[in-house]
Image (cartoon, rainbow, N blue to C red):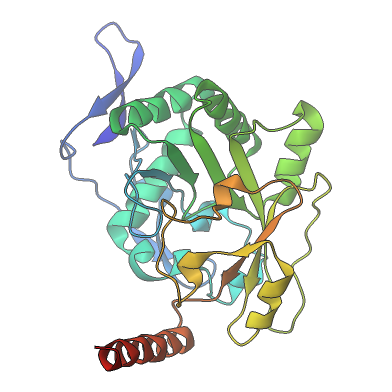
Length: 286
């Protein structure tokens, strides 16, 4: 399923939901981004198609995901981007087909009105019956009017919980300064990056929004300073966003959570040892 903007016979634009594969094969070009990795070129992907996925193993199958390309939306000054530690720079996120989908989403929101963006999201929400909506397992808030869309969408669906992580602190602060509080069902979490030298990327959180703290491998003791630890990043726990008892999407003002470094060579080796120890213990108890 995907959503498409079309021109009707009377010349008016319509947003429609299409089931099955796209009628046309999307062609795209790959070029190197600012960090030396390969990304889709925006000019080579479509601007009339929007993609909303129905979750994954981490978020859960009943959670919506809407993603944008990090090359065009993220803060490139952050160490996570420059050091190549961003999870959206690894694995399936870097597949050409996924990059094309993210870029098509970005072209769609750049070339659509707020009303069209919200209408397209609503079609996906109604089709899947989501109760939770995650913005940006890949990407970040691109511009101010996108927050307007997020807020209106959340207010239109008070029974749905929306959440996102962001490093666009100044953008969110400015929106709140000018418009007031965010809806209770829209949780925007300020993502705080801890560099390898122990310094933090500067964060202005004057509205006391919830935060997430990145905890590098070997510094796990820092997790004691936060409200809870994301179980998806903890090798001793198996969970996703649907089964988590301390979910990101319930974080309150002033609360914080930790994301342990994971999916790197060092952490994968550690996780393998933990798994082997668990299996040995289980075998010994039989």
